[in-house]
Image 1 (cartoon, one colour):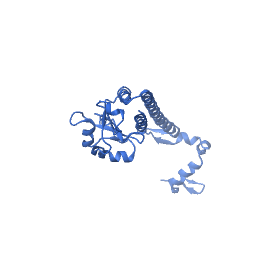
Image 2 (image 1 turned 90 degrees about the vertical axis):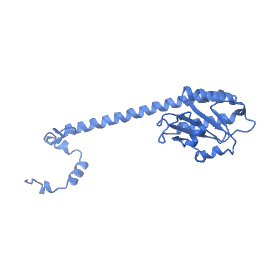
Image 3 (image 1 turned 90 degrees about the horizontal axis):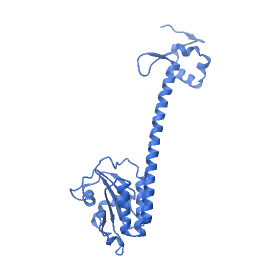
Image 4 (image 1 turned 45 degrees about the vertical axis):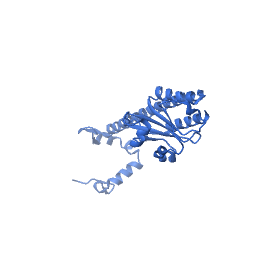
Amino acid sequence: MSKQPVRGVEVDSLPEEVIAEYLQHHPDFFERHAALLTRLKLPHGRGSSAISLVERQVAVLREKNEKAEAQLHDLVGVARDNDALADKIHKLSRRLIRARTAEALVDALEASLREDFGASEWLMVLAPAAESGFHQITSRHLRLVEPTAAELKMFETLFSGGKPRCGQIRDSQRDFLFGTGTIEIGSAALVPLGPQAAAGLLAIGSPDTERFSPAMSTEFLARIGELVSEAVGAV
């Protein structure tokens, strides 16, 4: 291969890094040497045919634009989902505000979780004071325990962390919350309640193993927990 000198420097002897750095610091190079754009040929990104540098740049920009549009579409989808969740939590807030008694609170929570969140399998576990109105309620969605109940020790890490947890739960937890061998629970969300209310938790179960993933955000669940805690403490 013959070497063409450029101003006393053999082109083949120039490292690629030097050429790349020069072009990076002189982006107007091809404006001053426009004829090169039609002579340079590059392999097509999606085939074996050769295209000009300008065509390759257009193709790269088109691919970047497609990726940007896809990212924007995803962001819009997330924003819409968040708006929908915020609206559901707003409805829950209104229901809880209207609840004046413990029974009305449980009914409001049941209606919201079933109608707005599509959750039919859920349980609120509370250790209320003796004079609490919750002692007068009979509901499959409410279980009262003593503050020192051994069952609560199964959720010590949940209470100590103070944040909702999602994913699969231990068999002992599942059996305590949803019954033994009666309901298939693939995943669950556990939301600690407090400190305004007595020690307790809100458990929402689903037969879908991916419904409550450990990777999902728990921000909205935390807000639900705060609302329920305040409501329980107020009735």
